[in-house]
Amino acid sequence: MTAFDKHQQALEVHETMMGTGRGRLAVAMDLLTDALAMVGQHAVYCQSTRHPGRPTLDLSLVIEQIGDAKELVQSVIELRGGRAPGADDPAGRE
Image (cartoon, rainbow, N blue to C red; front, side, top):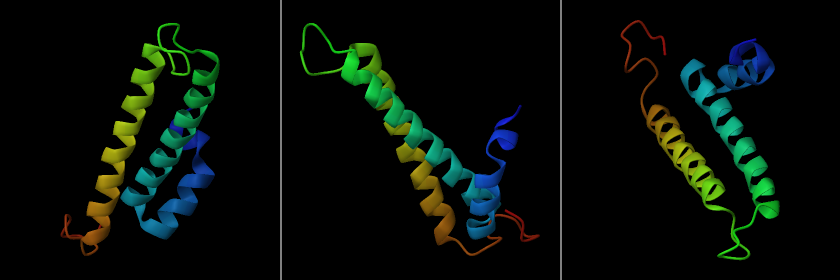
């Protein structure tokens, strides 16, 4: 099963509201946010022995990488939103 099959309903809603490209990016952002929340919950139970109250190094790196990915996806959504529709495609498709 592909990501398009698994998230068909969310894709349809977001693509209708925001266009194909931005809609897909919005769904990707939601998935990253959900993953970040799940890893954050796991980090509560997997705490560093050297730094009590902080997640283990591997979880810290995963949290950081997901956060960075969210930041990059958000920047693309904002860039695409500032352009006129079809600015990157003369046929008017995204």
